[in-house]
Amino acid sequence: MPVELGERVRATFDRMKTMETLGAELLRVEPGVVEIEFPFRAEFTQQHGFMHAGIVTTVVDTACGYAAYTLMPPDASVLTVEFKVNFLAPARGRRFRARGTVVKAGKTLSVCHGEVFALSEDGEKLIVNMSATMMTVRNGPDVTPG
Picture 1 (cartoon, rainbow, N blue to C red):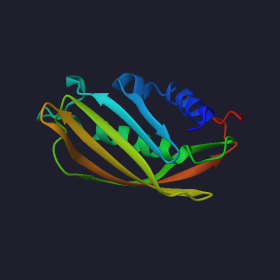
Picture 2: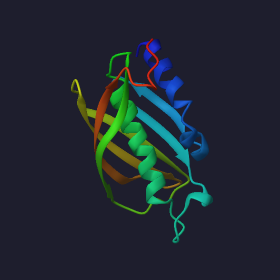
Picture 3: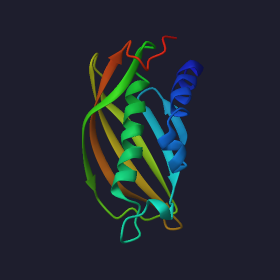
Picture 4: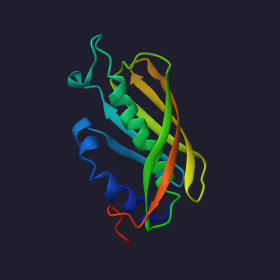
């Protein structure tokens, strides 16, 4: 991975207050692939004590967005256009790992696949499957040409 790619992704990830609030960490950045890990936190659970679907979806959406971003030109940014999420099992675990992978990168739209794994003493379990479409935004107000 080119150093500048990792630095570019890290710089924008570090500005995301949402990820900071969730305690999420950027684990892996490669062209077309990003992994983010985050801890179980009781303040983000739903009524049954599982991590809330909205929290889990937020992180996997971010992983997909950054995966698409790794394949975009330096003057571009990314926005989510659409996603569909399948919850395969309750979000229970010590930690969670979200992985976003680009399936098809395009000039304007990129299609991504996202997964979330619950990590526990018993190993890892796939709990979420996402299909997402990301849009390339060029020279927008939040894009700092590099």
